[in-house]
Picture 1 (tube, rainbow, N blue to C red):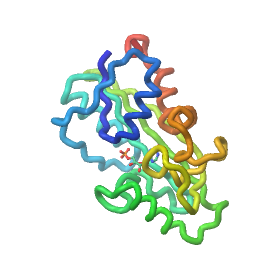
Picture 2: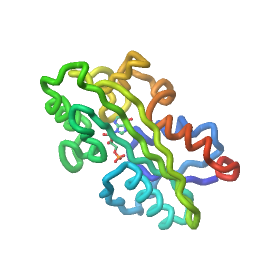
Picture 3: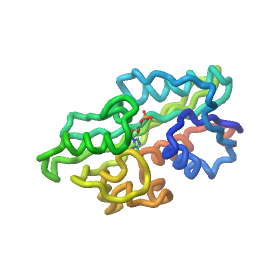
Amino acid sequence: MRVVLATRNQGKIREFADTLSELRWEITALPESVPPVTEDGMTFEENARKKAEAVANLLNLPVLADDSGLQVDALEGRPGVFSARYAGEQASDEANNRKLLHELTGVPADKRTARFVCALAYAKPGEPTVMVRGECEGVILDELKGNDGFGYDPLFYVPEAEKTFGELALTEKNRISHRARAIQTLLKVLSAEDRA
Ligand code: IMP
């Protein structure tokens, strides 16, 4: 089955391709012709659903969309749905990481708890959209560690792995990440027809 992945984020695409490899899906990248969907929801779920349904209706194909981000407890859940543009529209990963470190200046290690959240929407034209969520708990370090992954990965230390996401190989991150957990849940709830 052909499924469109509603993202242009190369980091996410790599993770989806690896985690979904057990399905016989033919995963297609988002065509250049598809205009960006405005992510104006207040929750990850709202944004993921909006992206998936808009693209599914436009292309008349099944679409998988995620909306994800980092919730930092000491920052009352920020950057949350604004994770990609924390330091401004089109902000680089470096700028977002710098801003996060700045906002957490002086916050002690035991108060730097955080989690990555991923809401995943699977939309098919004319059918109810399937929604699932995955989370991964961690701690924000006070310096970058590791060169792998993308986004906030080098600042996100995962106690259960004893490493940051930036220090984990793709396959290791894909065992425990918020996105991987959401995908595992999706695979359990998809119908046999959709898994084919
Ligand atoms: P979205 O495209 O609106 O879902 O933006 C997600 C943003 O959250 C990304 O640009 C990253 O800044 C951050 N993010 C989400 N998932 C991850 C991850 O697995 N590692 C690092 N940063 C992530």
